[in-house]
Image 1 (tube, rainbow, N blue to C red):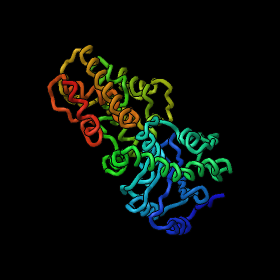
Image 2 (cartoon, helix red, strand yellow):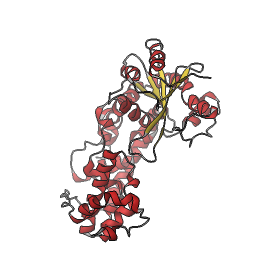
Image 3 (cartoon, one colour):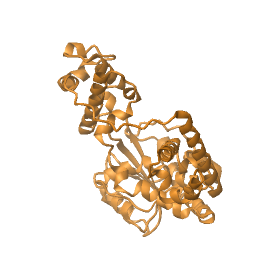
Image 4 (tube, rainbow, N blue to C red):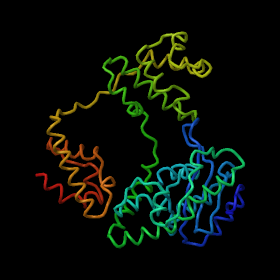
Length: 369
């Protein structure tokens, strides 16, 4: 059984006892139903199959030992789908920036494997070990955790160092090691990766707002989405605990002018809405003018689709030649951006022109004429 750590001193001693430069595997368990920011419940630290620790994140108040590990350039931090874990870890550590991250999921994508496969699939495929996943939907904030939960949590880290070594060798052999490290540095080691989205873009999360044809309703919907996002962050509440998407759109359409009218919204729980009613009514009554959008140049859909298809074909070809999952190289959105720039005669500064992607695609894109 791996040690359970639930006090600052023991946590510090464990971290300081890890040999200098030794890679560590990191994973988190969290709850994310009622709050805007995830509730950090458990930290798993793995060194190898025999050595790991489970850290009670609800009990630890001094995360400086973890901050030292995350910022230690001599020590590789091994994760799986690190985009889920690093924002939580860096937030707990006061907003520090990590370095020397190795994401096994991404590494697999640079070795010709699907870049979205699960840890269970990777472990079964390469280590021939079947992991039990019965605790995937556990509530990690309840104490004490069960033996099954503890076993499940440890399994997520104890095999990662072996997988990292396996993919390291494959990356060295196929020539993609420098590119995968560039990708991880861009995704996980830059301040931009941890900045919250701009509040003024909050409405873009709701596709229905884009389809609103009533200008006044659209202005109200945009204003409500921005208000909801700002308030959710400030009060650390999940967005639906303020207004669900359905309720937001109802308010935008119906424009209630009183509390009585406001309480007619779908699935209204007056106890929840009453404390924010005045704020909602003020936003609904006085939405700011919608920002002037840059006029889009019309492109014939058939012509655009044909160019997108050609670019996607080039992505597929070059990715396969280099042994990379094509999804790692570029999405349809990336292809559409490059296609639109090319058809409009505009410079293309999209992802397909940047960094390792630019090196991979540069000669191929010239074939487009």
